[in-house]
Length: 414
Ligand code: JFZ
Image 1 (cartoon, rainbow, N blue to C red):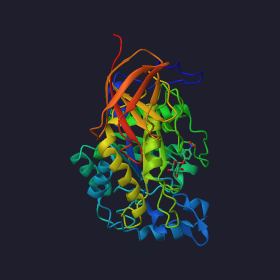
Image 2 (cartoon, rainbow, N blue to C red; image 1 turned 60 degrees about the vertical axis):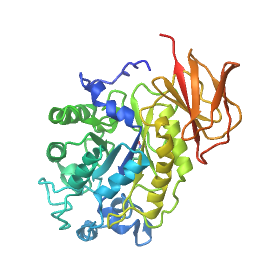
Image 3 (cartoon, rainbow, N blue to C red; image 1 turned 180 degrees about the vertical axis):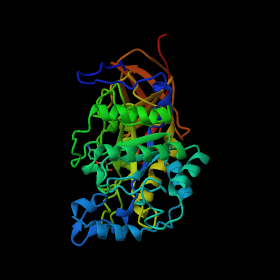
């Protein structure tokens, strides 16, 4: 897609020679795992009669004394970094983003900046972020950190914002220097209690320059600034399927498997693998990523409902992952009624949700189909020119209950 000019008021572009290569892995990944994990998990989504999850401290008016006492009991001894990485890998996810610090300010790594962290406050000696980094690296998975700019716990956030920013930078310096994350996922720049609200474009520029000075390769989302086109490396529509035509900026939609980000014992409204695969294909066809969330239980184990959903997606990806990984917007065809179409180089992937004996594809710019096949099947697919494009004529029935994929070889004019 053609670059889009910065809008009026987009007064900075932290763009550099690396911005293209820095994001290449991200643009190819298409599918990642989000993890919301923190001491809020210990409440399992309930405080008295109040139901909330990672916002439970604020929304249920829990006194800090109570929240801190609860956090002191946080003992995620069943957190298994390797199992989580294998779960992501099996699902076809290429990167993981875990909450290093959510709005409650609690650090999931042994920060030296304060004692409000898993080691010093909860007495949990393991370093989960280190374990996850090591397991991810060993398996070719990228690891990123969510970091909330909004901090409810540090009084300086309200009383002395510059002092808070200094501590925030010190924490980010620890994270980037000690764990070398591939990505930083900022959030909470919209903080309601920031006395200098709004978080300014200048704040965003300053923070982006700060992290890039330590690690020029670290990818950042746009919640580092005012979420304009030029902030960070990519946009973050939430729980929403990015529309078409695709944005000039890279996009990543974050989404829950059930209704909540953190763990809630009462939330069993799990999306089906079918819906998740279709959302994933929709996003890939628009050149956007899906960051699909899990919220581990207080022990650190992943719930059966969430792991089953990921497993179902993974079963589909094992045969059909070529239609997702490394693919993007075709620019060549209109989106059909029977499914979605993605492209990788000289291949088109027809992700067919509603199988039929004739699958029509409207051609929007010139290409020639030279062959086609069903992924994971020996049954041939014939292709003929028809109307404003091509008809694909599969010889057999749908081979996958979620979506059957036809891979087509194409040539385009030089
Ligand atoms: C934030 C957090 O408050 C929430 O707990 C979770 O971590 C989520 C991923 O991010 O919530 C948001 C952030 C942005 C929007 C909405 C909720 N938004 O842009 O509409």
